[in-house]
Image 1 (tube, rainbow, N blue to C red):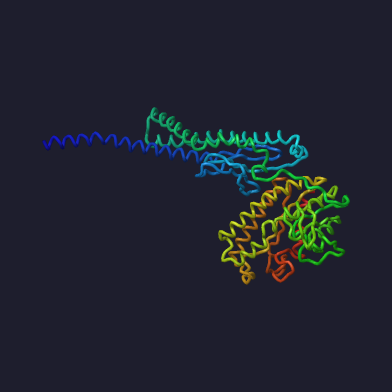
Image 2 (cartoon, helix red, strand yellow):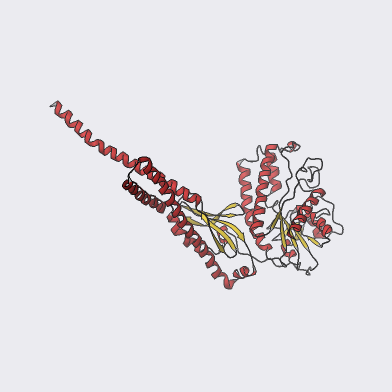
Length: 472
């Protein structure tokens, strides 16, 4: 009796073993296929080229963001190297990523923004983005297939399958991989085109309004003006001797006699209109009015449009938009410059500046006479190897962070200029930073700390002059 029971139990266990092994083998197969699918999709998203499209004079490369764990959210616009979230949202773990690579505003394109052509232009722009998105995913499917075949073939070879089993592995594996791809990725691929068709311009993606013309300022035309300088306190020449026979606006904006605009005027025997104003930002100063010295200063671009045929326009802007002096002060007061609060403050300022800079670059294209546009990058005021600013709380480590952030701002200035077909200029203060014997920068005890001194303005003028000669 006992023997019979033992035999029956052993038989039942033996019968169950194949089922356990089959279940385990099935889990291994599914797990392996999931790994192959994940690797294939990741490879495809990494190597699939962004698809260039043209919309209203803008060349945009359409691709995808990295996969996200959320089921929906904004896409991404890369403008001058800065990643900006789109105003529209998309369904799916990956979303459109649009990199602006070239912008050209012509009279024909400006006409497209006028009311009669606005609807047609918007429809064409949205359809162009949708077409680029569809092309991207056709490429993505191809790269997923390639990666999956390679991985499945390697597995079949490692397992030493015969031809029939290898074929079954490849076909079954490809079917599984594409089912995963369709369920995880294609939901975005199928829904995003309808969203993109509703986008009429890049402005709608990043939340900007359409181009608003800046009217010329009141006053007589200036046919004799050959060059125009616009911008902030660096352009104004803050900290230098006052201009002889200065106007009330010269005094309000603290324009000085050693500003680089006056150097260029002397070197080229030009009539240069220096519109730079201390405290100016893009929104309040260049494109819009600002208050300085208790006076209302009209938009610099509006005044610039009184010049009928300027040859050169030089722009020096961004420090006030980025709250640079505040960043330096907070950096000196904080334990470190790269703490989360200061980093978030910088990133938010950079995002706002990037969008305002885009608007400025578009507006510069509307200046009369089609002048050569130079965008001045910012000089480097510090040398991290010098420790003369330790008393102000600026250690070498902190200065390294500040220089890294300054380089980021300069990269935005450079990329934006190149995208619009303008020229960016980098003044070289190397070896003459703050605390050196022949510094080009005003020190803590000078009228305008961290601003260029007379030697610095001469170097900025020479950098601009060199750029002009190269363009001639």
